[in-house]
Image (cartoon, rainbow, N blue to C red; front, side, top):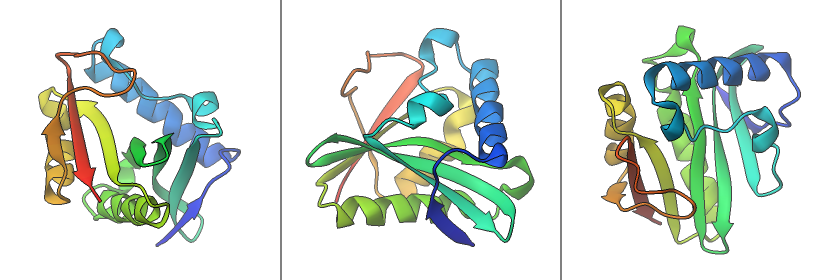
Length: 151
């Protein structure tokens, strides 16, 4: 598996992100969907990563700079055909290492509270993330869980 910075111009990544957004709106109340679309992910404060095996897209994740010492994980997604293979763990490890390389002290994230998000919460807990209150522009949303990791 190769994880690389992605310029978000490929058709495969656009399809995966479209599927991701559609799924978020299927399982989450609309006011609680914080997933970013393709254009929002092209922001200068976001670095987007994709994971590949040859020409097969396995998954993705992004790192948003909140300030000089804090990053936020965005858009973690594994392609349906490749779930349960540890791809999310590898992408998360890559984002954590990149955050450390940048000198961030904290890495934050928002994920869902509903049962469909239990695997995501378990993954983040396994990597040392702890629950916290909302941060940044997020409201105290009852459908959201906020987590942080001290690096």
